[in-house]
Length: 99
Image 1 (cartoon, helix red, strand yellow):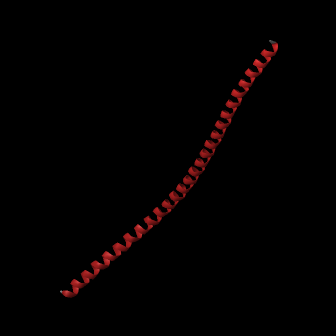
Image 2 (tube, rainbow, N blue to C red):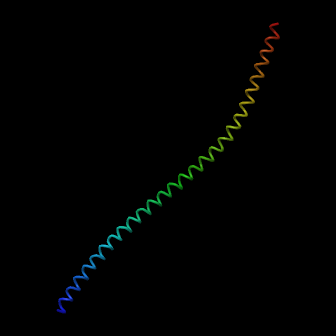
Image 3 (spheres, rainbow, N blue to C red):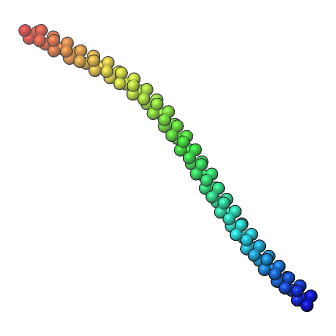
C-alpha cells in the first residue's frame, strides 16, 4: 500500500510539474511578446523624435522665409511707388509738351 501511495504521489507530482511547465512556457511567450511590444514602442518614439526634429527645422526655415518675404515686400512697395511716380511724371511731361 505504501508503494502505491508513492506512485500516486509521483503521478500527482508529474501532473503538477507538467502544469507548472505549461505555465512557464506561457510566461516565456508573454515575456517575448512584451519585449516585442517594447521594441515597437522604442522604434515609434525614435520616429516621433525624428519627426519633431524635422518639424523644428522646418519651423526655423519658415521663420527665416518670413523675414525674407517681409524685406522683399518692403522693397516691392518702394519700387512700385517709384514706378508710379515715374509714370505720373512722364504723363505730366507729355501733357506739358502737348499743350
